[in-house]
Image 1 (cartoon, helix red, strand yellow):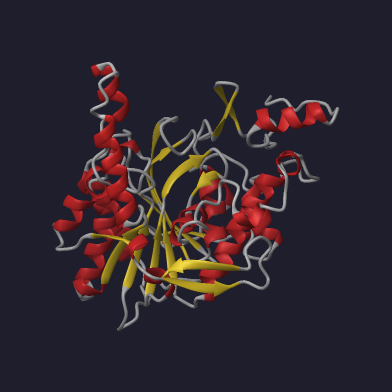
Image 2 (cartoon, rainbow, N blue to C red):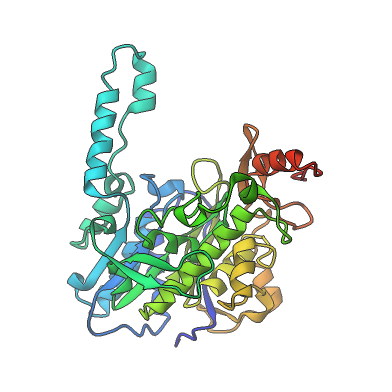
Length: 397
């Protein structure tokens, strides 16, 4: 099937467990790509950006499964793409920072005043990201390695139209690639609500601009009070600026002119915070499309959430980067080649919804209420400011 830049393509497989063999991930990705006509360049590198945020094991579903990436790579190799053109990349800190982290961990292991059991639990160094994530062994099967793009040069992309960023420095592996595959894992996130194609692009920005969840140099003119106040959209200024940062990022990636495709690893999805707090659920699908907002809108909808209420999708749609109305997006089933009508697509939604949660007063609260409305991120900080301002507190229910 020829790819339409506005459509989203769904391919499904059987999944009845949250523990799925490596080969099943590989098969899902390979078969999905086999049903599409990939317009790949004859020259230049073909870059793959999985989501490997921390050194987590593949079955945690905190990261894109290496088997899924291997399936995509194998499809391209079978199409005749030379292995030396394939680059799988993630940013996990400059080499000197990694060395300092290891040294600090080794020093802490030998502090004499610490109890041995506590020391081993709190300070045992994690295996390096390529090994812990399973990517080192998986890619070695194909003669490839995981590239750390934090040890490489960046490309400055000017954004005179940006709302927060006036320029973004992206890894050259993405900004100067012949083609870019954006390969996120289907999971929730405490701030962005869903981690899909848009959130995964955050890893293409080099530090310190990459750290968009926190307060950055671009936010320096705003006080803590200003950042935590609720605006007229019902979220905090901090959260709205985060959404605009992601919209600026999409604009920057598109300005590079590099052809791209989003391919979501949705074999098993994860709710919760995006990290250790959450549960896994078999989904058995992949979503493919060129427009990040369209892919994320369909993915958020399949999670059981409302993309029109999801803040970053709402901001992106307002800025003309795509639509967040599920009824306006054509979704095609790659198995049948047919467009899915509203009833068929609704039949694939997860119930109960995969719910993002945020920390609050030592616990967690859902980011969406029962009526579908969004609860602001960092609610305790928001309510602390509202109390100081003499305003009614916001509840999570």
